[in-house]
Length: 243
Ligand SMILES: Nc1ncnc2c1ncn2[C@@H]1O[C@H](COP(=O)(O)OP(=O)(O)OP(=O)(O)O)[C@@H](O)[C@H]1O
Ligand SMILES: [Mg+2]
Image (tube, rainbow, N blue to C red):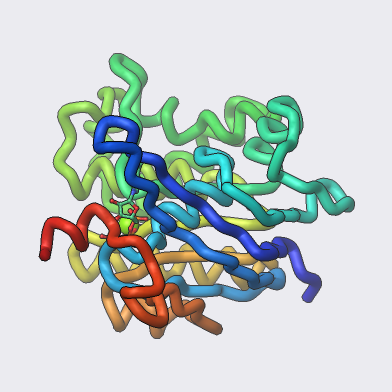
């Protein structure tokens, strides 16, 4: 399979303006690439920068330096410094992201939340609805909840709605931030099956999994994000709290 995402020398800093302008070097010179059908798992302690890396790849954070290239509609596209129109097109067609928590929009029904990525790609309403219903059933969201907005759902239910939305359409590249956290064994198994189905369909996956069994079920390679030596890195906010 071909390489679908390529990251070179990526770095990300946070400047804490409210705290004497302290600069945190969270990502330093990261380079890796992922092929279609492959899952790269991010390893590293809490605060190592795993979620920051996924958010940077998705374009939520501007990197301090480096390159993020994705295969978008048959061509390489540089995401660092890309114009908003290209970033939006990549987020619609190429790069899927399942964040740790569902961003709930008040009054929008669960079924509509899940269908949205397909409608944005121009699917017919009935096809989108059939796929959304299939995913919600597989993820054990009771049918009586489908017409309700997920704002009042339990944490695990919201996470499963988030996952259904994330897997609604096929993606060349998927970013997964702890998709199996806070799920019971049965639902975790469904999510692992969805990930493996996406891999078989050719998706390049970059994921964070705290649970070892989940990791082993999907991982092909891992990226070690533990800093070589703490002295080599500014203390992160979490580490400062622990001092
Ligand atoms: N928006 C932000 N502003 C300032 N600092 C941030 C911001 N986001 C993350 N950080 C800091 O960057 C470091 C990495 O955070 P990140 O959430 O990426 O860690 P993580 O590896 O995902 O940890 P966990 O396993 O606990 O989820 C932390 O020390 C955090 O405090
Ligand atoms: Mg995280």
